[in-house]
Amino acid sequence: MNNPAPLRIGILNGDDIGHEIVPASVEISRAAAEMHSVAIDWHPLPIGRSALDTHGHTLPPETLETLKRLDGWILGPIGHRAYPKVPNAINPHPILRKEFNLFANVRPTRSYPDIGCLHDNVDLVIVRENNEGFQPDRNMVLGSGEFRPTDEVTLSVRVITRTGSRRVARAAYELARQRRKHLTYVHKDTVFKLGCGMFVEECRKLAPEYPDVLVDDVIVDTFAMRLVRDPQTFDVVVTTNMFGDILSDEAAGLVGGLGMAPGLCIGDGDVAMAQATHGSAPDIAGKGIANPYAMMDSTRMMFDWLGHKRGNDGAVRMAASMSGAITEALADAQARTGDIRGKGNTATMTAAVLRGL
Picture 1 (cartoon, rainbow, N blue to C red):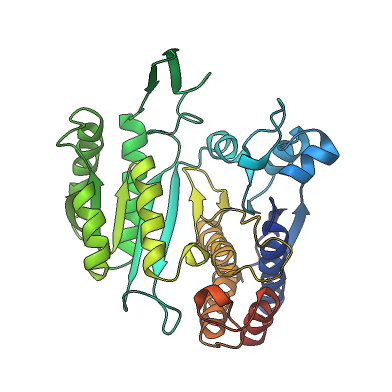
Picture 2: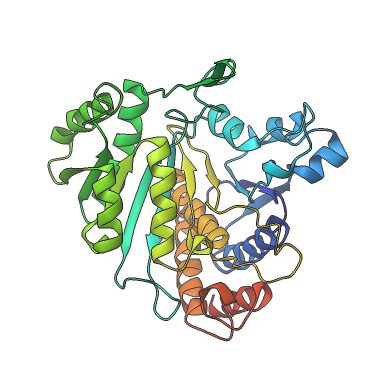
């Protein structure tokens, strides 16, 4: 009989609406875990602006040390742009992704009826490389990937490595094998002949290992157009960091907005970080109207991934129950939030998910 050790899960609310949508996600997770007899040790941890006020740092050392002993964590949105300009007010995102080698950001896009989607029958996943590319806050070991030698000149460095390209491509191939067995790699090797060229080379090299997966490639600007015109033709998409960041937000716009944009950060190890792809929305924080879907589904993805990774059948069943309940709640216009053509709020959406479990 499968009797795995308790899952050790961190709770990091983040900033602004994170203090509303993360507790909602934890609430439905607790209920689903109880239903399927999944043992979870929960670890609330300080992070973000509130941690700066209470611990003097937006990513306190004790938070980082505790995370190293966990199986996964739920990270709420971070509003780092509003942090005061002091040394310890840092953006935790890139540090967590680099520290735990979470190089693949898995971002699904799925349409649901009656919520304002521009297309029906959309079901694709963008796998974004997480730690290299045109991201100057994370693509260097020391210092920044962006600098200004004179007042008139700024240089931004894009980092592409064979290792980074190969490992995110492999993660995408594995995901495609579990889905509809179609992988598209997106690039701009017509211009970035060396950088995107290396990424393309590594994607192609892996293809013989996955003969059951149909593989094609699309230039990034063409893909941006096709994503609007015929998103149903795509299954799993893998691309470099900046392209993936932009294209996944575009994809979210097809299916109701960023409130419908979940995400999971994974790597070679056996830890995962549930992180919705939207921001902290300070303009609606405290009003109780934030859409919790993206955070809830990110959390559901984490438990599904951990369940398969660790042979925890209960966690897999728990995630399946969460998925069904979330889908059922989205069908209730009285429960879902206003951004997706509903009449409800965060609390009514959470209550509807709980009823559906």
